[in-house]
Amino acid sequence: MEPVIFYTLAVVTVMATVLAIAEKHAVHAIVYLVTSFFSLAVIFFMLGAPVVAVFEVIIYAGAIMVLFLFVIMMLDLGHPERARLPGVRDWWPALALGAVTLAATLTLFASRAPVVSATGKAIGVKEFALTLFGTYGVAVEVISMQLLFALVGALYLAKKRQ
Image (cartoon, rainbow, N blue to C red; front, side, top):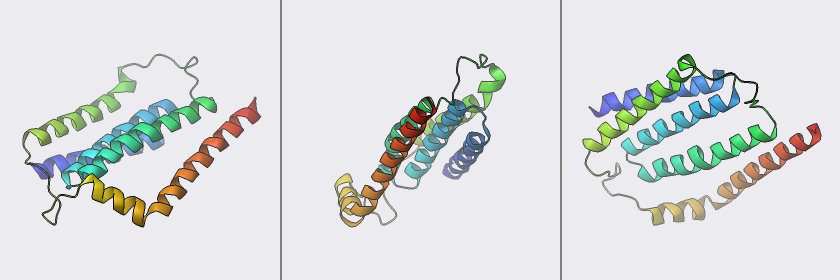
């Protein structure tokens, strides 16, 4: 049963990512990307990395998507007042992918034992944090600075336009 769920979520992840790239409306692209992140988080959970799955939801599907939405609003890319009301034809891909992800997640939680890593020992949040911020502390700081620069650049572009 797990391989079926894994491959189903892999297809959902790829389809949602392709739809996010191909979507013309920026806010709809973000919805597809969030769907991709959630299904990817379930895949990470299935692979025995629950901390990475939680980070995927909290950091990417939460914080980064809010940042993207903020940049879209600042650059005035959404134009919700000019858009027509979405019909069933516009919502069915997101609803179908979301329903498959939700069904796979519920099936996984209903039929799975507690998660252990490949070594047989579960790794805790403390060990993960010590490795992440000890060994890779500089990389984490560089990434946070890149996000700050992107936000400042978006604000500069939005202010220059007005």
